Image (cartoon, rainbow, N blue to C red; front, side):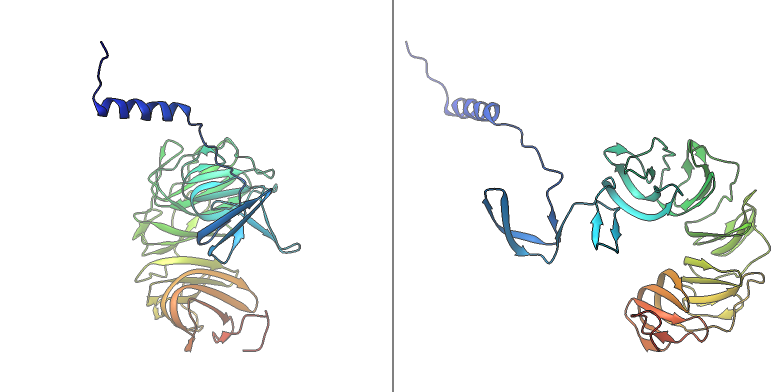
Length: 324
């Protein structure tokens, strides 16, 4: 006697057979990517033609890459970073230390901090901070890091730490910041730190401080910013800072200021920016500021500007050295 089966059983069996017959698809990690939607493709032999809403086609780099200015090509030897890279510093041997909010580097688990060697390999160095790393400095065998973390290298360190550059072990340096540290910059025997903190290095310091490189204690330098400091650029005579503040170093200064390296007092330089300043860089005679603003030095400048380091006036910036 022929046995009958419910329709749902037959359909389930067919789906199982189809699934078993299908082969796993392997994603080509070397296939180039676009910066927008791809609407059409045509494969002709070894060539793939594509069309869509993009303006760039290039190699997959992840969140960390480099660009050769001589041959104008992206260098592809660096490992893919899964997440966001917020800071990087050369290791002095062709490689890089990187920090941010990522989970893998080159396929290896690396939470928020990693070391990449000159050949693009992921070094075993793995301090594993439990929060974002937003700024880092390499000085010989020491790597100073700052951000949002509260533990690093299995050691309690609130938002700032010093690590051994080869093994990643936490050193005694422990400023113990009460809030996020967005930027650290080294100058001689000091590390200037900026962020949201109100205590650091064992002292009350509102959002900006100078720390001893040996013991992490706060020095007497105390500009006392009234809001967040996001970025710092230090020279032997001036410490430039950018952020959300409107009062620092005893003077009204809107989002960008120059402070005396020894005194911490605001200098006469006062371009004024309307909007947030997130990053600073210098190539004399310009201080380049970037962020979310639309006015700098009294002129319209959207999100980026080059400010004369003598008088604070905006410059063209491109080409470098052009007349204001």
